[in-house]
Image (cartoon, rainbow, N blue to C red):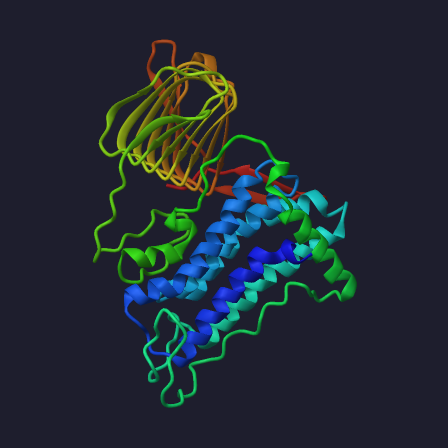
Amino acid sequence: SDSSQCLMKQAFSCQRQLLVTASSSQKPSDSVLTSLLAPMSKVIQEVQSFREKNRSSPLFNHLSAVSESVPALGWVAMAPKPGPYVKEMQDAAMFYTNRVLKDYKEKDKMHVEWVSTYVSIWTELQAYIKQHHTTGLSWSKTGPVASGGAPSGGAPAPPPPGPPPPPMNLDKSSSGDSGATSHNALFASINKGADITKGLKHVSDDQKTHKNPTLKVQGGPLPSGPKPFAARPTAAASPARTLPPVLELDGKKWKVENQEGAHGLVISDTELKQVVYAFKCNNSTLQVKGKINSIILDNCKKLGLVFDDVVGIVEVINCKDVKVQVMGKVPTISINKTDGCHVYLNKDSLSCEIISAKSSEMNVLVPNKDGEYTEIPVPEQFKTVWDGSKLVTTATEIAG
């Protein structure tokens, strides 16, 4: 159906319009560039928001693959290495596309074809960027300076730096009509109604610049491409916008946001159904009393978390130098895209499972009988061998 692919088609349509403008116009000021990027930024946010509204969808891995990679369209704001930036976003999606392949490889080839076709979009975009926009979006050397609206009249524009890519026809695939029908059906399934889910609220990625690089332009000059899964680069020429600190209960979610140097944050009036979401909290400490459902630390730096009991999961994602201390019990702690995480267990939480991915400098501290802690590093290096029938992976000690 038309609505099934609306968001992604709209995103590529916005991209194409910007490239057409750049091919016939001189580069505008940062403020005008921001207005030119705004429509694409908005669609990227909508794609990511759609994923968050459908967290319990059976196709959540498909949605996540799209949501994680659609920021690649922000390459137009990522000088001097736009191509590698698109590759980073493509790689970020691979975690979820691999899940799709694992789930459907033996069940439904339509999903396998979808993965192949979707990933090829970004591969082809990288080739286009390498040929025409190697170090950043190329603007015309002459012609009118780009404005927020359509280019005005005047002398004919000189030859453009490179044609915009052909319109992405998401209706078609290399596998012919049957493949096109399959992909249409799958996109329709992915995009259908947000009312199919009624899971936990989850703070969306809409306003996080690492999930939508076109938003960064509003803060100052165009930044260089970020390193994968490292701390987000800051624009030295422009001070970061300071957002007000938040500590409030919104429905079932405790929101702890933008805390700076706040030592002594306490959430005490808790219930089992509640969750805690801490976002962009730096050089602070947070204590959560009682038994709750889950805790998420997102984009926090030098944050100390102490909690009593969690019945679900504690997630640490995109953080740096954080400490997590369990006073009671927790079944699972997940660490993802994080550099520096110390987990302090107690005697009641020794059976806790710790799941890590794309992270470094992780240590688990286990209590001794005398009350002291023994610090044990979580493996970051692995050895994989083929045993004749399957791959066998084991953790290895890092030499030296």
